[in-house]
Length: 147
Length: 126
Image (cartoon, rainbow over all chains, first blue to last red; front, side, top):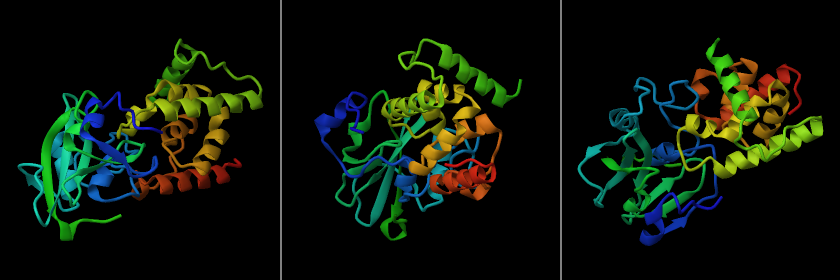
């Protein structure tokens, strides 16, 4: 499955590369958490994983709380900081759509739903599909879970 | 009408509607299988880069698979064994079963194993 560049018009302009094959076992929120064995989403019907005790609401506070269970806490920006791993939550008017994780070189990595992982610029995924970044989080790199 | 019956009814309406009508309805088991595999391909090609499994499963091709009715369950189990994916909503709607333990929710591999075990218990050969 090729990345649908029509959905992300800024992706080509800002540059990206595919870093994994498609895989329906994990999604963007799990990947932001550093995991590749689960599908994280606040599905009200309970088909997806969501940390116990966190509201199954498609809201920024619920996503922030979910990622806090793997060591993240809110921060002010997506700038590279030594010793910190950052995550970004994208949202549209309907609520969160996507999460990305910062790499040690300052670029970002994302799992595109059931499709590939890509390495990209943060703004490359902004647009109608995912909206814009509405929340940054960070955790100490020593705390980061690893696949 | 229960939520499961409503979901099945919606899927049947979609399967009888204009969308995806280029894929002819199936008659024999062989053409049913071909129909199913064609819908699986359409779903995987068109479902998009979204992380809500509910959104992925709302795609018309997925709903049309549900609209094929309980006869499609063995094909779903076989596809689940071949390549684990989000077939759990369809299986639940079509069978009413819920064999996935709470601790396995969202762990696609474990959910697939639970459904395949359920299938064996029901006499299905995946």
